[in-house]
Length: 285
Image (cartoon, rainbow, N blue to C red; front, side, top):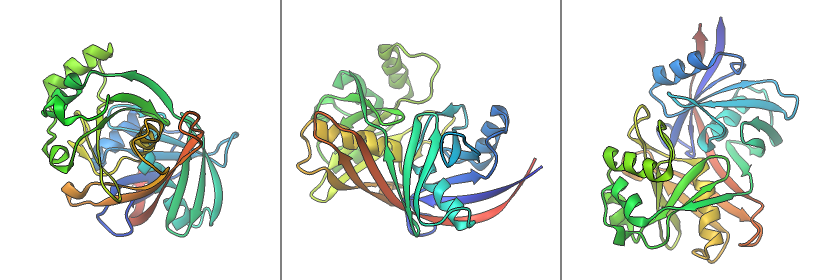
């Protein structure tokens, strides 16, 4: 059975920048095993599968190589860009049905702006436990790490500078101890999202556990969670900034970010970025 497929580099306006995602149009009815096998075939972090929705303009399913997840940022940008590339949508507003709820999107040319849901703030994690996951000193963490979700949970961890950020290396044994501390077993997600601030915005990294690739070039869902954390904790003076990620991988990506609402009552986070359709073809199953 044939399915149209687009490979899109999200959070970049050029080929081989940002983070890649393969979008399988009309593939939401495929079984989980097939979706995960397709992700493994691409060697990408995530792929999306679209279908009709009774609650929104379109339904989007998000898959890692190991499981389905409720929401992801760069695949959302990629999915909408792929739909526009095929003439399925035009500029203007759009709503997506995701596992994390309805996500409003605005399309303008190659730029996609998504409004992530209001953040959920969860547990703090001791700095020494988080630091061990990245193989760095706990003193490099300058604010209490905390789990935040705007659709997918991440442990937001603020580091003192780019030197500390660049030094982060994934320690699998420490990651297992970190999951034990959280009381979570058998997962390959929930890794720390490492971020540092600059005069122009933020730089971040996400190192991942197998079977995902070792590092994510740009993480839109974590960017939304990180923005909510920085604003709520008073670590940024204004709710708008530029988020950057992927420089160390040679795949620089960036997003324009805006936190909505006051620090103590955030209603959502807008994460906007460009996308470049790299390849189009047909998946034969």
